[in-house]
Length: 264
Image (cartoon, rainbow, N blue to C red; front, side, top):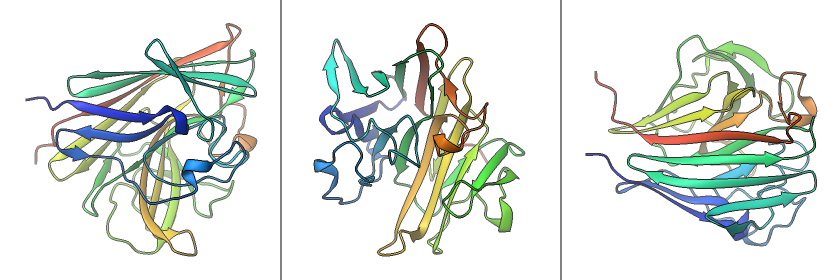
């Protein structure tokens, strides 16, 4: 039996996904963040969990992008937001066992941007992230622009991105050169698949096991399909960001599928 996948969003609060439910399970993690309801463009990121739409950058300026802090409008079954340099439109469809998000960004030809579906997941310490072994990635050990190359699943220093584990006081970010990743937790599994023709597709990971922030750290696990290969647009090389072609628009699709657990 295929479990239905249900999504709830808040257009008035940055288009944030506040619920991603498969059967009885809620996959999105949340935390109390009183600043979230009153943010304005340019504010520092207010981490309330859920899934935030980060565009045109993740880190850098503006913090976590320009779309999450603006109200979105809804018309004809689609939600959209207008930012200074672009317009982003998202259409969600709930299907048996999956949810499909179709995106369209319009801007001047040549405009470069990053986008991430900044999904923070409610996953136990036994959770696993599945990406093909040997996939190249970039680990960001200090939260800045510096990164170290690695091959999945082991980063420099021996940190394993495939195993979440208990809180150990660390916080690491990584970007893996793949358009698909699966999260498994007990008998439940969730697969993220990104279809982005002619654009650089990746999956960003945020493995915060009680290491961030320095004051009052908490646990949060991010699995974030993205366009681009860096967190900060200002640090993007020639092939590290999405680019608007001569047509003036970029289209891509994110599919989130509830899949059966792997067999032993």
